Length: 334
DNA sequence: CAATCGTGGGG
DNA sequence: TCCCCAAGATT
Image (spheres, rainbow, N blue to C red):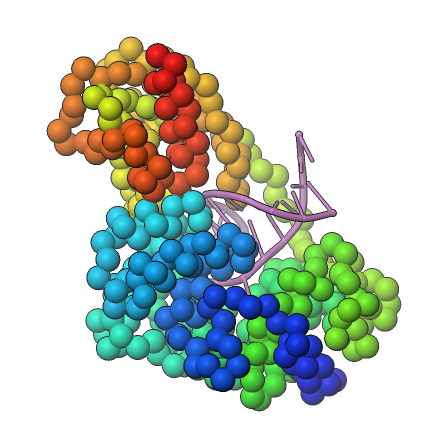
């Protein structure tokens, strides 16, 4: 079973693999910096969303040394819109560790990679396998789905995770485990999809227990999710002389480290006026944020004042970019 | 261990 | 429209 599965999958991958900007062509040597950067960006994020960010980052910062030398604010602004901003904070910290303590070279094994900020169990295995040719058991959401079907694992996630790791270990080949991992992910993305898997095109179909039973659609079994609470908030658009007041959010927590409009408490006493609201859905709650707008008669010298004509370059996360669009409309209407 | 942490696309 | 989901890590 194990050998059959890896051979069938690698044969399929040799023909049908996706071409991706971070993926080395056959015969090319993979660049650990690009593999690492792509793996961080791809955490809980689709390939389509990552592409433009990967291109932007690699052209601005072609090496880990270049990234390590950048200002935090530049990197956070460049990450704006991609989400999960702890990844960007860890990205900088990791780049500086690699540049400063590892001579600019990423560690070539799982255990050392795992010690770096932002690199967990999955990412350490993926980098070790893909960038350094190490045998590693690489389990992401795609692999969980493929393996849960292949072996008809009825236990629900996340409890079944260790079981899925053990099963993935049994089909991971001794060599080419990087290609094997990427093949599993391409398979999960293109064929062994969450809703309606295209078993007719699947190289593993003859080996698949769920396929044999006709039950592929029920896997992976997942625990019931908690209901999503609703919350309300207020943001403030304070402008003066063509500039708007921004704040840098605290390093930890929601949208941590990002530029934003002031929230909760008004940044000044002023004649605040309602300018509508924005509904925004985060992973674990839905937010309705009202926008209050005002013109200031003075410019607090300690604040961050951003030229409104260039607000698109501020690097606001999506919620605040949408609120800023409302603020600009309010301004043009006034 | 369970909660926290974004966003956009697809069915 | 709503729900699901994605190359997870951290605390």
